[in-house]
Length: 81
Image (cartoon, rainbow, N blue to C red; front, top):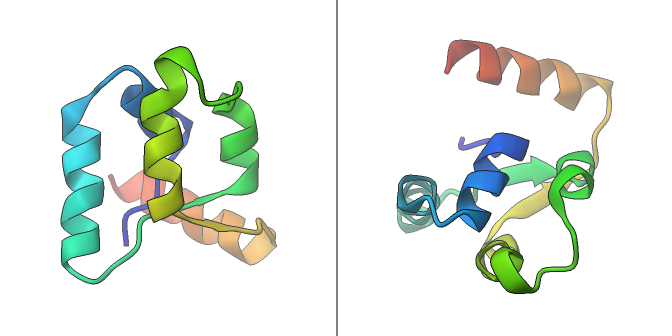
């Protein structure tokens, strides 16, 4: 599973092609990249200008609700990366 944190979404907005390639690779493998609404809230500023790339990426990302269990799992995934 590819879990996108705020840094990854900001990198997309800054045209970091590595993060976009990772996301596309996950989709081709039949796995949907994930993030949660709190992360989107940290980075979203309307989706125009520099954020146009981010606006194009987000429809292909599963945005899940953040609860305690997901928070813990996310922390462990981020620790291992």
